[in-house]
Length: 491
Image (tube, rainbow, N blue to C red):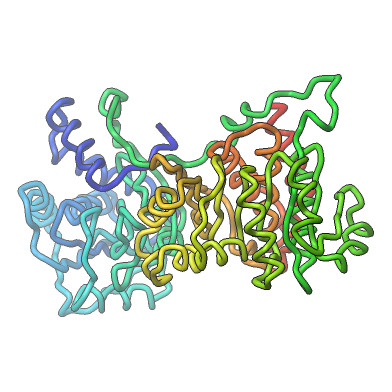
């Protein structure tokens, strides 16, 4: 259950189950949400001397009024700013509870009150339109204060389904999410607005979640490690597959070298590289374990294709006639492939069917070219984009970025909770291509290899960035990839 991600509609269904099947009153759930928020606030800012709660019209606003009641009960000076009149009986009851205890309610006409900590209870999971007018101005003012913010359930202005910003959104230091994980908070722009994400199920019993539909899962690296069993004492290199990495046009030999070594570091038995003749000496000097082959034309690559189990196609491939010729021959070979970088640009420009059990690994710009849309359209709904790519190309899709998504042809979807901005540097995608191809060479199918590969790559990136994110190089991941792959397998 801890890895399940839900849409807003699915969370509403859980609410309904709690109220109708478990007999928990809606106002009781609201009180539990306020108590959960208060616990988080006290743990994070125990010395706060003044709290301001910003309340909207819906149940999220009701949570805010009851949070203010909690603060008042222990003597913490608290002010409530109402940005709309409550709608719905429970929210109205919550406001009455605040007023009946002597609490004042201010409106936006008074401006944003001064406080040491702010609680955002403006919008909940139902926001699907751009934030405008007074609320938008208030959110901008709140963000400009630089003061810490606790968001209740969802930072206001974030679409809980997609993670996109609806015009403007609160930047919280902590978000306490209620009942279930909202899928939109795990990817895209939402990650810049949630801060630390805390989940509180509000005491709902297991039965409330039984058989309830959910949309996606967070990756679980420990569970995935079981897909690679311990090696036999009599194992030999042929047991762990042969990757053929194809790419490295003029000036881009480093990309194919990074990809090739990554496949070796996660355990592939053999790795060959089909690349421009001028790259051979550098690869042999830096990584002699890679079997680098001077590949001046398709004829030179044909015997390499015959020996390979899986292809890593695209790192440094370029867009020259040489590049396109190798690209066509690789895809026409029928060998399962991990397709990245320049190979994706060629796929966007030319109609070509991918081999069965293949993976494509686009960043948002490449995804937009493949779908014939703007990059902004990808950002607006990364989940829909990943699923559309998987269905259109009949493959597994790794849509890279903050909160990388992995989608299957059948519409299954996983989200990566690891990774950091230090990984926004050249060569990281080439390493990921090699990691996934190396896992496929060892017998994992595309769906498993893509998920496990993304997990290993992101966790290695986090390990490499422990001394600071800026300046992290793709090459820095290799030692961590080897350690993580072996540690997880041993566990």
